[in-house]
Structures are given as structure tokens and as C-alpha cells.
Image (cartoon, rainbow, N blue to C red; front, top):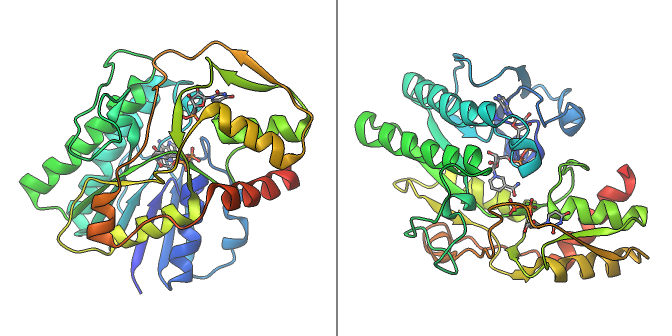
Length: 309
Ligand code: NAD
Ligand code: UDP
């Protein structure tokens, strides 16, 4: 049994992670300010004696005794993180500093949830961890992608200077049950639109690519990384199965049996044209690779959305 702290534990990925940690027999403290997370995401966990919920904003410091910190607090959808960009930067910089300071003080291992967005609009394809990225430092996404790049910098410097036991994962687009219905992300948008029979909104020509990883696969990778000694990362965690956004729209329309039509909307600024992880490092160091196909993952996600739409 390990005492674990999950920041952002009431969010999409965090709530899946809390369940996995409880299932593995650990104590879980879920810390969240409920900006994008909800009590509903963790409702049935509230009765579990090994689960505690702390309402707190990580831009303020906090002292909690714990052995492991899974640092996931940060809005992840472009709509959410651009809603209050200064707050997003504060969460990434001050929030990550507070969590690293906590890890140092209580001698906890800390895992930072970074992102494929650190690669920006990538010139190297697929992206390996050695690629430094192509990021617009003053663009609309910078509060998030530059924020996460600073978070990585802070994390590695606490490791170099203070020997804090750190880990960095770079998560690629992840989807699954409990995604927020109106978070503006592509999988949730398309499923909601298809189920409601509304137009499916393709941004640009829909030729940009992404690689979608089912949340259970991701959680396996997160767990493996946290429990791997002598490896800080950064390590990519994602599914290398790359598809265009247009193909995704067509698939979701077909799978939902929807009569929705595809409509074209303006491409958001700085939208990366392609993204696909090279996961050789995760395979080698963690023995990890995703197992769930897009077909299976989407079917389960659509079922969850049907109950909520
Ligand atoms: P999410 O928005 O569902 O979850 C984020 C959680 O953090 C929410 O519960 C929110 O309330 C909480 N939070 C935000 N700011 C906070 C603050 N200042 N103090 C305390 N809590 C705060 O997003 P998600 O998809 O679950 O993403 C979780 C983490 O994974 C994020 O760090 C994100 O950057 C990273 N990530 C996600 C993806 C993805 O595809 N979902 C991809 C790359 C990286
Ligand atoms: N996208 C789209 N229609 C939507 C929402 C998103 O075509 O209704 C596109 C978006 O422009 C991007 C891709 O889907 O190219 C993934 O967008 P998302 O916001 O899910 O993630 P990110 O851009 O952060 O990878």
C-alpha cells in the first residue's frame, strides 16, 4: 500500500487514475479545484475508506503527507485552457512549483503529466522524446504548451539540483468515458454532434492528423511509469495509430448510425498539422504499448456519451 496524491483527480484522466490506484490497493487523496473536474466523476469513490477528496487550488501551496504525487491538475482542452490563459500559466508554473516543493519536502516521487503539445506543430514526424519542438511562444496555445514546457523544466531542475525523484510523461490525445461533453475536444464534439443529429464541425479541411489513445491504455502506462525506478523520462505515452480528423468524423458518424452532415469551419490558430508518437522508448523501458483499437475504444466512449447526452 502506497499513499498517493492525484492532483486534478476529479478530471477526465485523473478520475480513471484514482480508480486504478484504489483497485491496486493504494490510498488516494484526490485534490482538485473543480475548474473542469466534477464530483460526478468520482461520486462512487467518495464512500471508499481509502479515498479522500480535497478541494484546493494548486496555485496555493499545501502540505500533505504522501509517497507519490501524480500531478495532473491543468485544463487540457483548448477551449478550457484558453478561457483564462493567465490562470492556465499560473497552474502550470506556480502549481507545478508547489507540487515539486511538496515532493521535495515530504520525499515523495512525483510524476508530471506533460503533453505532446510541447512538440508544437512538429517538423519531426513521428515525434520522439529527443525532438525539441516547434512552438509559438506568444500564440493562443502558449499558455498551455509553453506552460507545460516550463513545468518540464522545473521538474528536471528539481531533479538535477535537489535530487527529487521525478518522472515526466508526454501524453498524446486521449479519449474515453467521462470526457466532458462540451469540452470542445474533437472526440467529444463529434460524438455529441453525431448523437444529437447536429452538423459535425470539421475545422479546416480536416486533413490534420492526430493519434488517439484510449484512457485505459494510458492509465496502464502512467502506472508503469510511476513504478519504474531509475528512469525520469520524458517518455511519450500515446497510440501511434494516426488518422485524419476527417476520417475520425466519418467513423463516428458511421458508428453512431447518425444522419449528421459534415460542415467545414475555420481552422483555429496554431492548430498542429500532424501528431503521432514514437513509442519505442515506452516499449523499451516500460514494456508498454496500447492494446485497445480505435474501434473498441470509440464504441465504449459512445456508450458512455449515450447515457449523458
Ligand atoms: P481535465 O480538464 O478533465 O482535468 C484536469 C483537472 O485538473 C480537472 O479536474 C480540473 O478541475 C483540475 N484543475 C485545473 N486547474 C487546477 C488548479 N489550479 N488546481 C487544482 N485543480 C485544477 O483534463 P484531462 O484530460 O483529464 O487532463 C489531465 C492532465 O493530463 C492535464 O495536466 C493535461 O495537460 C494532461 N494531458 C491530457 C491529454 C488528453 O488528451 N486528455 C493530453 C495531454 C496531456
Ligand atoms: N477539431 C475539429 N472539430 C472540432 C474540434 C476539433 O475539426 O469540433 C480538430 C482541431 O482543429 C484539431 C483536432 O481536431 O485539429 C484535435 O483537436 P482537439 O482540440 O481535440 O485537440 P488538440 O488540438 O489539442 O490535439
